[in-house]
Amino acid sequence: LEVVPDIRCSYILEAIGLWFSLFF
Image 1 (cartoon, rainbow, N blue to C red):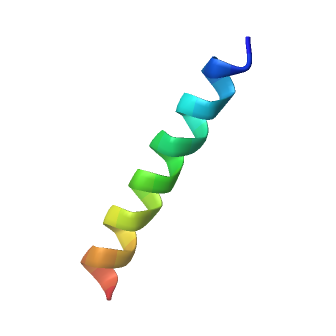
Image 2 (tube, rainbow, N blue to C red; image 1 turned 90 degrees about the vertical axis):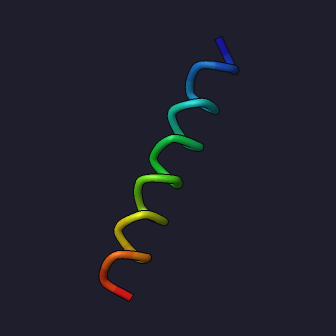
């Protein structure tokens, strides 16, 4: 159960990183 939220967090962080790389 603790692994699912961790994967979501890492996925969200990667998405944010892509957005930042596109804008900045």
